[in-house]
Image (cartoon, rainbow, N blue to C red):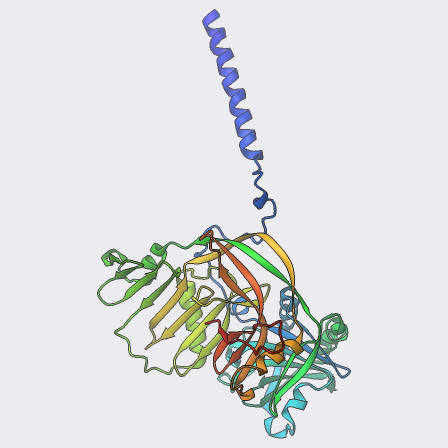
Length: 441
């Protein structure tokens, strides 16, 4: 009996200890200061998800022209809410009215117009995934913005326009006037809550609207995850078991004898190449974008909030760029881009970062200068040509941390696209110093 009693006591103690340890494990909270502010948690497996067109093709900003003033928002939540709303609209009677527009730039900034502006031109076929468009004739026509006209109503129908700014093309379409009136009440009439913009006219056909005042931004510090190279080897090669690996001084090469995947360890990105392909296939423009999306979906390659940023039918290139708070993120080593070049219905060149943003333990408020200071620096670059300025926007520059390879910072910047290249605007303290041409790509 005594022996059995001892066993019972010991067993009871063990059960109590087990319960206590389990409770401590469940309720454990780390006390590190850097972990007290964790936000922006991403997926456990950074290379395992798929995305559709609405999550990859988003506007850069919305610009309102109201009572002779101009207001704009970059806010991701506002833009997502608006795009979700207009996705329910039924769009009819799409037609080309370009020849009837006498003054294109005046038409764009007309009172009562709200511009939904994208980073690059988009085929109407892709817009059909963003709007309910009833049209079979103009799928291959490209546009870089949608204009909602809140003042023009006829027989219960309102008007929206699909615009190609570079080519000065205007397509008109009809929308139920109740939809337009709802947009007017909930968005357009409230536009003055957004930062006021000033127009800067560079050429007779090119204007940019930039903030009148300084813009409040957030300087971010992120911890990063490393994406395993094996994920790409297993998904990009048809027979990964036959792939051989060669380790070099600062890189490694994986090849099956035809295709090659090169890992740039210092720069933290991979390049997948099929040298047997000759890029002589033009294909359909809509296919190029959709095929590029499908390709990344097939191996779960969306390792962050990437959005379609640019594409070129002639060289069959598509670029998806990382975005944070709806601002594009730039990096000299390509750590914020997913680049693709296509051959004959097959990927010819594919570049992908090996890092993904995990969480941000540190945020710091900062300000970017207003439009006057930005334009002054841009126009002061050597041999400046106004007609070569293609875009001006706020963004982030991803900068590596010199003390820790797992930490990066996102610094708010002004940048502009000049003759095909994105360049950071360096605001100088002295008026005697011209703008810098610090390339971002």
